Length: 225
Length: 47
Image (tube, rainbow over all chains, first blue to last red; front, side, top):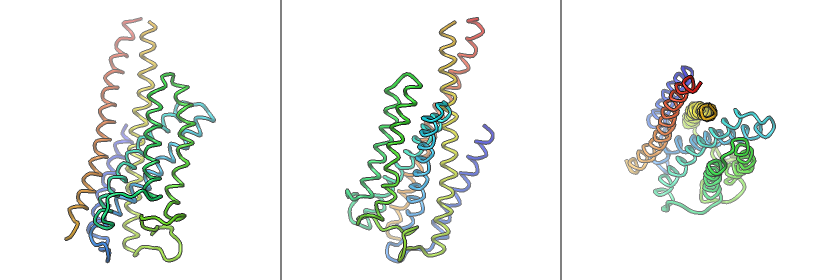
């Protein structure tokens, strides 16, 4: 509990510092102007969301292999937190796109694969509500979660493999891509802050899932008395 | 500055989503803690 409070305090300080850096330290982009500052929040949230889905994927694999409940708790925590981050990505993206592209949304490879990713993890969480027996629920959702994670590399690669309305990558994009050094430093700091915040949310959600299992166990014991 | 309102909207809505998500976790945790305490108290009486 104390560790989670400390982690939460550190995460809040880091995200506040990253917001300050995004507005006051990063230089203004020449062609897009001030709207480009959404980049530090939008892309950092997307990376943190991918990492949360990776946590879910690892939890799913470990559950299928070891059948220990703690891995199922980890997986559902990663899925829910990843979904929150992806929701933020799907909201901030159109707010950035509208003044720059003149449209809120287009069904290009990056945007569509991100929306599909969101739908896949909504389905993952819905599936968990449909199966009551805990072991069966954990196994079925693990198998579905392993399948759902296939979309993460597709989202990452969409702007590298296909021509899209979405801009080409500025980080790890190969020749001709890149960011001004201060922008790059602010971006990596923002991504780090978002990852700490994501870790805090996963820890909170994991504690909740663990408590839920304890409550269910105790409820069965009381019923049996 | 052009589009500054859109930047603030993106940050405000984004952090709003995180805040609401955290509130749902906190609310569920608080409800479960109350339920857990109730069950723990009822267990010795059942015995």
